[in-house]
Image (tube, rainbow, N blue to C red; front, side):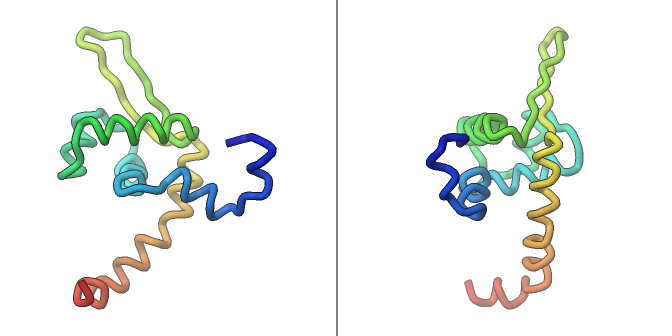
Length: 111
């Protein structure tokens, strides 16, 4: 993402590259409440497969918005949390949630 070609890319495109897809914004919302274990995230996001959740978490980690902490315990414990960059993204996404709630009736009637 840091190549010279990226300098011509608009900020919206960069943001969509990070959070695009069905589950990434949901993951940001779930992790906004603090660190979560994989199983807890999966329970909170009904309908996501283990494979897709793993892929999305890895992509968010590669983008620098999610941190994966492995604890040296038996059995091993892994927690996911937002990085400082991820927290700024969560704050940026917050108005979308407010908009969705404010327009819930109109949006659900249209579908």
